[in-house]
Amino acid sequence: MSAAGKTNPSSKPGLRMKELVGETGVPKSTILHYLNQGLLPEPRKTSPNMAYYDPACVSRIQYIQHLQRRHRLSLSEIKQMLAQKGQNLDFSIFSELDTIIFGQMQDTRLLNASDFCSATGLNRQQLKNLLEAKLLLPLQDDLFDLQDIGMGKMYAAVSAYGLSSEDMTEYVALCEKIVDHEMAVRKRLTHHLPYDEDAALTIELVKSARMMRAYIIDRLFQRRVAAMNDLKTAEEDQ
View 1 (tube, one colour):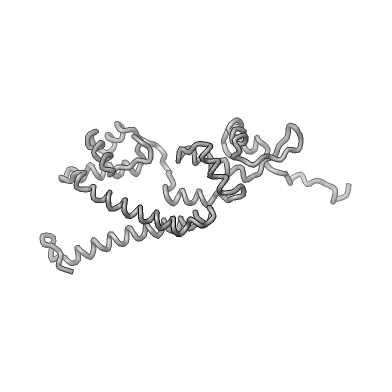
View 2 (cartoon, rainbow, N blue to C red; view 1 turned 180 degrees about the horizontal axis):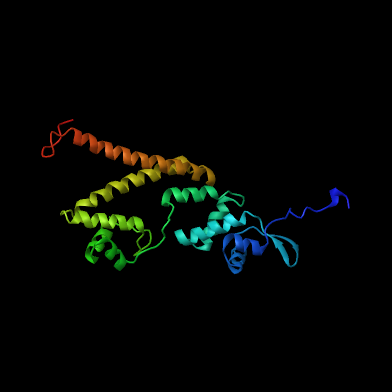
């Protein structure tokens, strides 16, 4: 057979099911369920018992799993989302966006209320007060991550100085106003963009917003302190 007529054994039309399972760590039954639900592109069948899946299915399956675990979306919701995004979208930008917003999640252990109180030094009534005041905002109801624990320890420490949850609730109202403004700005700037461009711009907006929050609040505080004669007197009129 001539060289032109030979088949390159290294050139495959896609991934076999066994390879797809190995790449994603997701059982065959789950992958087939995603396929039946229209969440994955149809494989290329070379015979009744042989099918090859697009390598892009790896990132697609990982993204579906991520949406289910982290955001508790149903498959019907995910299907609608994927349909709007298009079948050939690079999902890496959405993984990057998720990391920017939620962090790396290096430690995914979650504590229940009892263990959270033990870890932070808060009692149940203090925890209840902080939750009602929205000073503690767990991403999952009654389950607390490392960031929640860090805030809980801080609240326990400042409560020993006489600071109550009522003293801190003004932060919630102000921060909600800031977040409402940021979300409105993001919507205005991204609503007309395709999903991947929306995600890319949102990443930059999140980074910018975080810089502005830290810079402006700290600088306002620093300028107020610098204007004071000493710690016991009010700042001078600006």
